[in-house]
Each structure stands twice: as C-alpha cells, then as structure tokens.
Amino acid sequence: MSKKKPANSGGTIALNKKARHEYHIEERIEAGVQLLGWEVKSLRAGKGQITEAYILFRDGEAFLFNAQITPLNTASTHVIADPTRNRKLLLHAKEIARLMGKVNQAGHTCVPLALYWKKNKVKCEIALVKGKKLFDKRATEKERDWNRQKQRILREHNTG
Image 1 (cartoon, rainbow, N blue to C red):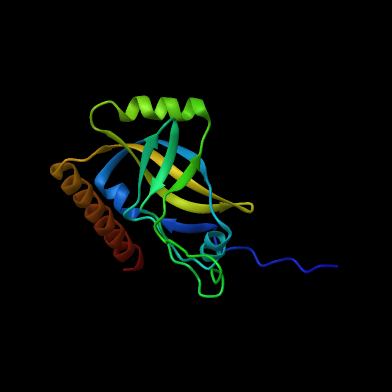
Image 2 (cartoon, one colour):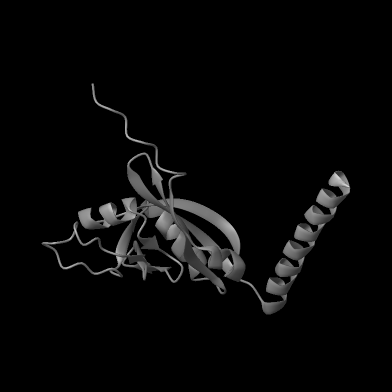
C-alpha cells in the first residue's frame, strides 16, 4: 500500500494583501492558471508571489501579468525559465465577456487576490475591484486600529 502524502498547509500559495488595502473588492471569481511543469514544482515549494501582479484581457482571453514564480535550480535544468512570464487564466467565455464589460467601465479593474491549491490544481482568485481614495484608506486603517484597541481593552477587562 502506498503512503498518503502530508496535507499541504492550508493550500494557500501566495496572497495579495496590498490589493485589499488599495481597492474596494466588488466581486470574486475563481480561475484556473495555465502553468508549465517547473512552475508547478516551484509553487509546491512556495516560491510564488503576486503582490505586483495584474490581469489584462486580450482577444477574448484573460492573462496574469507580472506574477513572480521563482524557478528551482533542480526543476528547470533543461528549460530557460522566465519567472515573470504571462500566464493564461482559464475562465469560461461568458465570465471573460462579463468581466471585460465591467473593466471597460470607468474605475473598474481586475486583480489577483490569491494563488492556492484546489485538489492538485493551482487556482487564482481574481477580483473585480474599484480603486480606493486616500480618505477611504485612512478610514480603513482607523477602523482596524480601533478594532485592535477594542480587543486589547476587552482582554484587559476580562483578565483584570
């Protein structure tokens, strides 16, 4: 009998925390990512980064630009690895058409939020977003600080 492989920790490969700070998230969609073999091996080793990544639509297809997947020395010996190559996102044609329609509206854009494992496939959570103004960012930060302080006060009250 074969041994079971250890479960991957949480399944999350990379998060884009900056996107949550910079944008109002209006809609989330799960998309597959077309990868090469060495990229999958690198992602299994946790060598993926999407903080500067963005999504563009061309010829009825969606592409993930500027996502960094650092090649492993052992995995990519016979291939010239480009860590920031453009990767195709796998979505249904209706989803792409709907997203393209909304992106063409003023103020909307599409950004990747997370790369994660779903069974043995790499998925990318993409979001339709609208940019935050500076005062929105300040309000979010103020609310976060207040919640942190509330927790601290409650903790001190319960222990004291």
